[in-house]
Length: 494
Image (cartoon, rainbow, N blue to C red):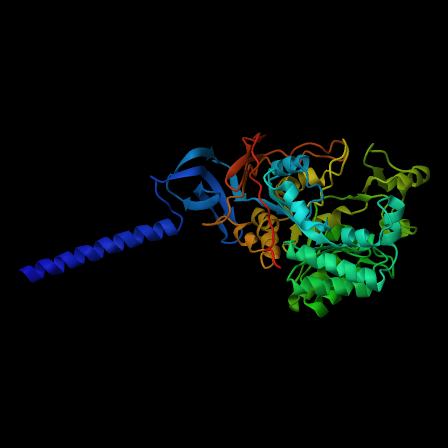
C-alpha cells in the first residue's frame, strides 16, 4: 500500500513538473500570462515580422524597452495601445539620413523610422557626434566615419567652399594619406558603424586611395557605404564603370560593400547595375544596395557633381535643376550665381521606371537620403520615403507585397550592420528579446504627404511609433517631452 502511494506521489510530482515546464515553454514562446503587467501592451494588431514570416493577429507586451511577450492571449499593461485593424511592424531603419537634428527626427518618426543613420557622409569626429545626441534624441541614431569629412579636414586649406572643393579635386600626398588613415582608424575605434565614402564628391581621390580605404574597413569588419565615382551612361565615366571600381575593391580586400541610392547612380541604366550587384552576390561577395522612392536626386550645387560636363553625364539641363531655397528652376545665369554661393538643389533626373524597378526589387533596401532642413524647401524624401513605399508602391501600384516592403525597411538594414554592430541583432524584428522599436500603421491609409512644392509635411497613416518601448507618436500625433532614442554604435576598441 505504501509503495503504491509512493508511485502515485511520484506520478503527481512528474505531472506537476510537466505542467510547470509547459507553462514555462508557453512564456518562453511569447504567449505570456494574462496576469503579467507590462510597461506597454499593443493589442489586436496584425503583427508582421519579416524574419519569422509571422503575419497574424497578436498582442505584444513590452517591458524595459524590450519585447517580452507575443501572444494570442490578452495582456495587461500600464499603457495600452489598441492596434485593431492596423499593421504592427518592426521600426524602420534608415541607413541614409543626412539630417541628424531634432526637426528631422520628428518628421522621420511620423514616417515610421525608429533608427536614423548617417552612413554615406558620416563624420570626422565619431565620439563627439554621438555625445551631442546622447539623451536628447527622439529616435535612435548612428554614424559612420566619413572619408569625405576626414579628407577635407586633412587636405583643405580652410572651410571656405573654394578651399574645400580644391581639396576634393586634388590627390592626397603620402603624408596626407597617413593622416587620413590615422583619423579613419580613430573613428572605427570610437564605434563608427561603417565607413562612409562619396567618391563622386572627391574626384581627386585616386583608385589606390579608395583601395586603401577599403582595406581599413576590412580590418575593422565595417561595411563601406559608398556613393559611386560616376553616374549615368556616358562612356567611359558610367555608373557601371564606377560600380566595377568598388566591387573590385571589395573583392580584393574583403570589405563589405553597400552602394547607396542606386537609382541616382544608374539612372535609366539602373537595371544593369542591379544585375551586376546580384551577380556579385551569387558569386559570394558581400554587396548590398538601397534606393529612395522618388524621381529626383538632391545635393549641393557647389559639389564636384556639377563640374563641367554634368549635362552630358546626366542627360539633363538647367531646367531640370531646382534651387531648393525658392523652388525655382535654374537657367544658365542662375546656375552660375548659385554655384558660387553654394546650396542645395533638387535634380529631376531619375526615370520613373528606374525608381519603380529598384523599389520592387526584394534585395534593394530603402534609404531616404534625407537632407538637413535649413528652410521651407527641401527634397521630400527625408519626410516621406517609407510611407511612400507602403502607400504608393505597395497599395496603389502593387509593385511589391507588404511583407517584402517591410523586409527592405527593417530586417535587411539590421542584417547589413549586425556583424559590425551587434546592437542591430535586436532591431528590425518582432520577436522575444528584441528592442521594442515598433511602427504601427494603417495599411489602407498610409501615404506620404511631403511633395516637392510642400516638402515639410508629415506622412499620414502612421498611428503609433515606439522607440525602446516609449511611444513617440500616438494616435498619429507627436508625443512631447520624450527622448528615448539611443546610440546605435559598434563596440569601442583601443
